[in-house]
Image (tube, rainbow, N blue to C red; front, side, top):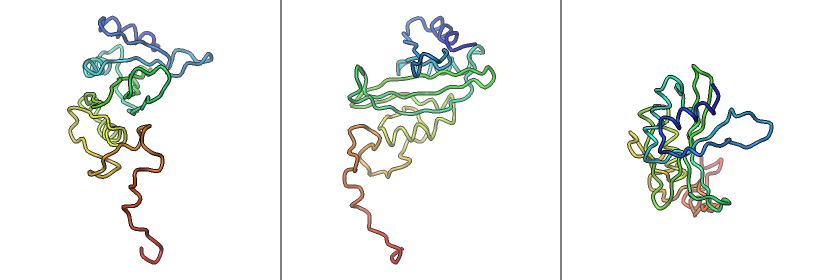
Length: 176
């Protein structure tokens, strides 16, 4: 089964959602193997559960979850996206799901109830991009500290930081 068949299955099941299916990376020499669909945040759990449980889809594995900042991206309508890369091990097909959110409080539901492996990936997107995952069992920072006020992977974060380096003592070989 190819990705277009998955889109047809989704469209038949969720007639009210415009999945806006498109190639993940449009190229002339590429078959339709890498298809991306859009899912609204308020329908994410319903669609993702279907993609996992329906025997025609059987996406048993969440390969990747990442946050994307579309600040100043040409023709972007939304600030952030959460991108889910799904793989069906039993059927041998893939699909990418994008869920778009905006400031001031970019929030999507957690998919940890569907794929337990989303736990740390959601925490990383929360910490570095500032995207909140409602229903996450332990949503806290993973790479920065609790008092850190910013999100370093956002495009509006300064390349040299906001003074974080000045807070640390300089360590030398003698003082270590």
